[in-house]
Image 1 (cartoon, one colour):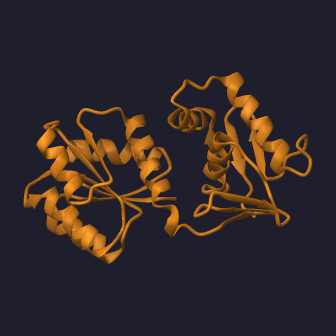
Image 2 (tube, rainbow, N blue to C red):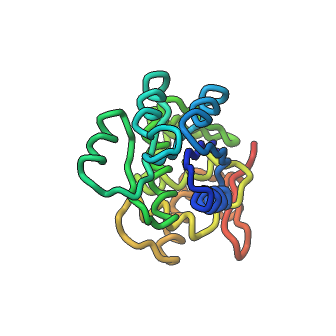
Length: 224
């Protein structure tokens, strides 16, 4: 479960964001300012930082600069300012992404997943039964033989193996594919991609063991 550090001094916004992200499968820690945010970061570095620019005891630019001076943890700015100079300043201090308020929660989730994928050179190799996935090389192996997947098939498999044992809803799968392809993904298309993926990774696609169907809800990847 990816760990998100949310540094936001507006309690109402922070509470709403934390609640949504937790429901979307993230662990969320909250800080209300620069000092507390950096303390939490240094105590236990997260997988991603969500950072407001305007903080009661400082500003997000200083926090981002400090984080990037100590690590490669991705930082996404969340700000009410859409001014070009603020955006440029954010990227100049090392931000990985910048999203203006108000924003759609699903868009934020997609942005987080994108920066986490780009930061996957820190990721470990994922294993599931006779399958391995190396995120640093985008390489999938089955019984020591390479499995050739399309970009969308690979994204689906990465989603499942990164969340073993967790329910992945069809809505989340469609959102993942939509983010990559830029086109709306309907149920029929999703069914096609799942069939193609299972045909390539399962020993018996009619009796899948790696990605199991949770009838009426979605799918789960095996935990072993």
